[in-house]
Image 1 (cartoon, rainbow, N blue to C red):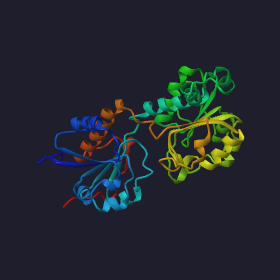
Image 2: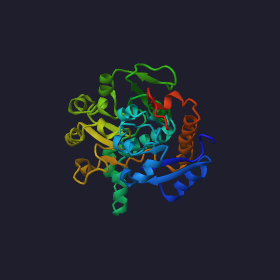
Image 3: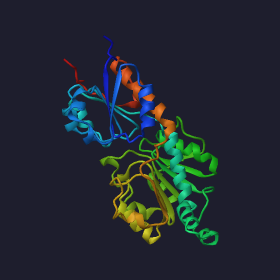
Image 4: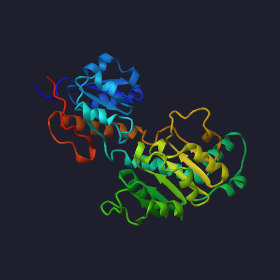
Length: 332
């Protein structure tokens, strides 16, 4: 019997409509049985007990792993693994993989959308027109163009580089900082490496593209925000815990920052009492930077290809491997 016969894939956290689910089922390899749960708690114990693979956009805890004795691979839809218990996966012999670069251009596009929406006060203008108010004179003093601005990119992986490439059409100066230091391979023309401190001081727009987790928690706090150029704009389509939200609200309130575009938050969904809701110069989106129908089929194909390689005993691309346990789980 082939190792790809009767593979049960528990798909967790997918809030796709039935059309998207149908696309995924349609391109799933023969022998793959997909089950969908919008939230981890909706995945039944029976479903976890039977699954060979978890494909997820949601947290995966050790408790879930313990309920899944057949589980050998957790395949992340996307790249963020801060909500997967990687230590537990290693301990229980479970591999973890991602889809490196699969939707980098999509997230970069949303990042630039946020830049433009903040600079041109898109939300304010839209609300005014809907309310019957015609405000070109009022909005002019608040609006700025992207061309000619210095954009600082924190994190120069697939997404950070995609942002830099797409910005080349906007006549911006592009600076970047990456924990690995200056990067030659794949660096878009015109992008210049600088130290993080220099990036904070020089950027008109600062956009974050680094992993979440404890290592980068509150990368932008009160002290970092105070070092930024007065009137700068912050964009975050990476992880919510990169920014101390109360410190961000203080900086917006004082005028230290002139705006922010946020797709991610410390707590999601964003709380009703969040101070960020009060600012007209803040554009908020619901962690949707990577959520486009165009990417469903290629993302699913990337995930399924990784699963097939793994089950056949072949190597998954190194960029996709997050956990390769020293003692992989072997089914009896």
